[in-house]
Image 1 (cartoon, rainbow, N blue to C red):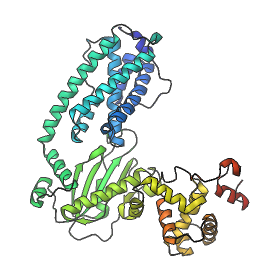
Image 2 (cartoon, rainbow, N blue to C red):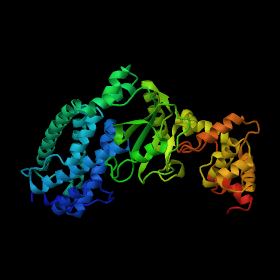
Image 3 (cartoon, one colour):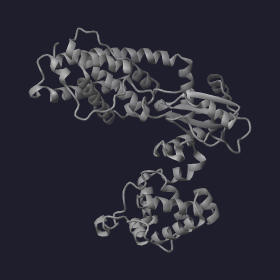
Length: 444
């Protein structure tokens, strides 16, 4: 062994590996469990470093996960070279080739791809120096590492050029370029667009964006639930292309404008879906997709397990929130200034806000609000009265109150408390609503 001490490395704060099981199994046989844990942890930090310097590498959860798989496998390959010698023919792991395909499809220039490789090499070199005996790189290690990274860079560049040539000459590439042109607002000939996409333009389009979360990131663990979605809404035609960030972009065409769409109540575990509004023609293709993107912004801010996001997040249901929270900082100020203590980030306040929101949205109908919330009318009455007590201004504009209660549904709006709230110590460490519940004999 050239640098046997490498096999004795271990991670102080291990992270979950994301490489393919076969890649990990081979590395464990050659390096041992501890060194693999170290490589996985460093690969995770390498990914964060590269994305901070070259943000294009992590344009969304799926690309970031693809990038992490590539970085993790590259670190493992480098450690194997250091242990067994540079004569061992370790080239670019297949996880790295997968990342190159993703870069090409997202239009990332080759120089940016190689800049990420250089950044990763520099980070790994420093991590090895920090972990080396006495903090000194053993003789020959820097040269061995450089030779391996140089070999991998050359292979990555060759793989990039081959994939770019293949992509640019493929039908799939032509379809994606046509879609990108439409979405960027270019004027396209409808006849040409129909021929390239094999999808009619003279339809009312409803756009869908689907993506998968959890282990595997952009690598699909199960097929997207397209059949369920298409069956539920009953469209006439559909168009499907591979979108950015490992997402599926879908359009469903309707000859007549749909008046109401039914979506599945739940999607298979790990899948998220967002729908745009119906819109006509080539411009409608773009309009509906943008609506789906705005819905995705809201859905991504919510936990996948939340009931509101278990099914399809429809733009028509969140368009007010989307419109009002485009500037998150301004939205946060507005919510806190309007709701005052009712904007406290605790469960009790959340319960009161949601009850008041449903009550106002129901035209101040106690019966309707109780039915929507699944509680008794007396509970609604009590919560509304308590919520109103927390609203600081008796002259509050009803419209502003309604808007603030809609906006507060988006996570992040309550991240920062108002600067003029009393310190927790002044109230025994309790938030305003907790004090209210204590006084009412409902808490401690």
